[in-house]
Image 1: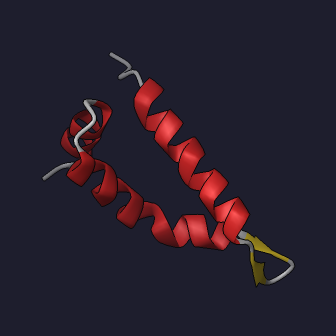
Image 2: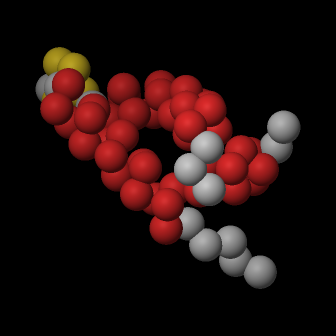
Length: 62
């Protein structure tokens, strides 16, 4: 399944699709949740929340 289709399903609120996207970008989220080499759980959760907002408000450019 292509990313665009997964993103469309996630935007519609499909939990499986949302989980797929979060799993795809998990390494990036973890990497960006490191503060001076230490994993910051609160920052990680904030990054997930921002990702969910981005999914919800994403508009395809045509």
